[in-house]
Length: 192
Image (cartoon, rainbow, N blue to C red; front, side, top):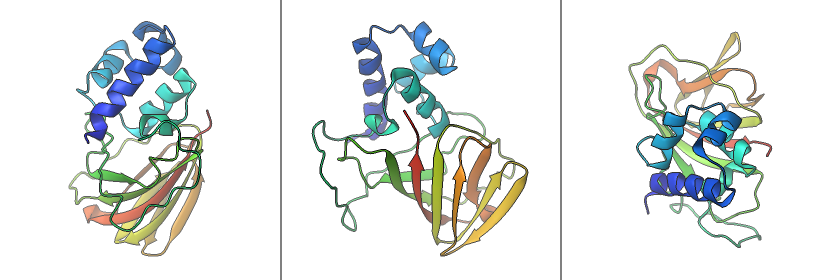
């Protein structure tokens, strides 16, 4: 299954079902018409911040774009090795998060309010990052390696076993410390 194609198709289907033009979605989300067209055509895969803006403009949960099933409402168990499908979020910008590979732990839970992921963070050489912000909260636990979190005017270094919980409306960026590979557990909450 190509999760990236599903995201673009779901956005277009949801927009069409609401009789919303791309211009209207652009106005509601603050994204450009061209950016939305490229996302719907699966040319670009949005980073989390634009995807959250689209979800809010369409009046749906972020998870709606990742759901595998339409009717599951009970608990979801994700056994070791079952989170192998990778979801990549990127906006083709110079600081795109193409170095982060998201493994959803809850795609079959359609009524969820939180998005739990295991995220593999590749080695990178980039040292400058643009901070982004969106409504909601994020919780991160470092499983392997060391992470750097730029949060507002502060920088936090997190080692294996460390956690951070923050309001994501404050501009932030999460990346591996000194460009080394890492693995984290991240739980993202975004209000509708």
